[in-house]
Structures are given as C-alpha cells and as structure tokens.
Length: 279
Image (cartoon, rainbow, N blue to C red; front, side):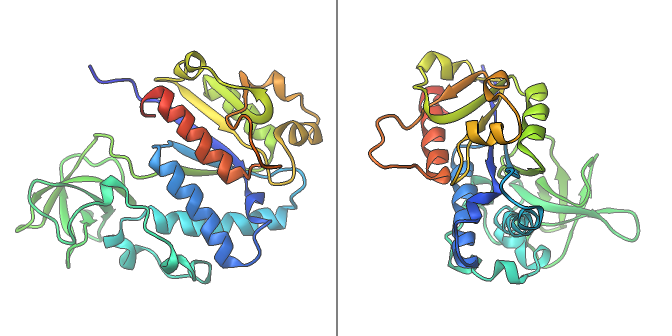
C-alpha cells in the first residue's frame, strides 16, 4: 500500500538575504534553501515580508530569489533554451547543482524513459516539447499543462514523439511570496491542517507529534535573523499561539547564541524526516 503523501511547506522571511553583503553571498544563501528543501522533498517554500523590512527591499529580494529558483529548478538540459542569464545570476556557476532525481537523465532522450520537458503550443496549434534534443518533440495525448516543465514519456526518440504524464514527479518546491506575516498566518491556517512555529523557547517535539503530520498538509514557520516569530507576530499585533498548533524547539541544548534561519531549516527538516521515515 502506497503511503499517503505529506505536503510539507516551509515559510521564512526574505530578510535572510539582508544580512548577506553582496550578490555572491545572497546566491549562496538562496542555493542553501533550495538544496536543503529539495533533499527532503518539501512541497512549497513561502517567503514572507516581515514588518521590519521595507517594501523596496522585499521586492528586490523577491526578484533575486525568483531568478535563482527558476534557474535551479529548470533541468540542466533546458537552461540554455529557457533561462536568460540575467545580472542576478552572475554567481550561479560557482554553486553546486541541485541534482534532483528527475534531472538525472542523459543529455539526449531515450525511447521509453520519463523525462521532464517544457511543453508549449506552436503556431499551428500543436503541442510541442523541448526535451534536450536538437529539435522539439511532438506531444500526443491529452496535455492539460502548457508553458510549463512537466513529466513526459518519450514514446519515440527516433520520431521525436512524447506523451504528457499525469503521475507525480518531484521537480523541486514551488515558490510563493506573501506581503506580511499576518497574511501568511491567515492563508495557511485555512489551508493547512498543521501550522507549526519554531522557537528556542518551544517544546521538543515528540515522535508522536511529528508522526501526526504524516499524510497531511503542514507548514513550518521560521523567524528572521533579527527577530523570532513571537516578536514578528507582536509587531503585527498578533498573538502567535492563537494561530499555531505547536511551537517546537528542534535545536535543543544549542551551544551557540543564535541559530541562523537556514540552519534551523535543515535541522528541522532532518528531525521531521527521521520521525516520518521520509517526508
């Protein structure tokens, strides 16, 4: 029996980039979030604007994050065709690849393999796909997604024919942005079964508590480099505990003054993955 899929979301502020001086360090920080959430199969990463951040800075960081995300989660064999090298991507060449399992295919398609491809409609109204070959493939069957990278079955590499697949293939976390912490809480309190805050004053999660998340939709919240979640909520006039199911300390007995947001992210995901035996 196939185990129920856990839809795990994480939310963190764009201000994790504020403390990094220069584009190279910002690129490294974004790559860490992208890589670490991919390792554990996170469904969605939401970046929120905390009250202390001005809107101009938020928008600048949003652009940088979006450009990097699009680059990281486009299959390497499609990047030259789909991703223009903007100034924001100046340092991506120094970063190690994300290496999703779904990217681990040959440079050229093979008949019978499942491969991510970019599906579009040509001038004649036919569905075509870029799959890493020299020319586009004809797409047959019902294809509900256009102008997206989706899983395809290569029906014939010789005839350049592919078919859209409805099966789930992990292609990295989806990316979202939200303009305030309050909007974040209001939205995901309605859509997620579990909303969980992280804080060094929280309780150490038990195996039983973590296992409650299995097969559900859950979101894990992280604070900023300067403010914890209780402070961020207070700045917006909110009582955090009224919105969350748990406040967890996933780094008990820490021997440093503070744990960085991205450090708390990978530690928390590791704790959840261990108890859930895979997210």
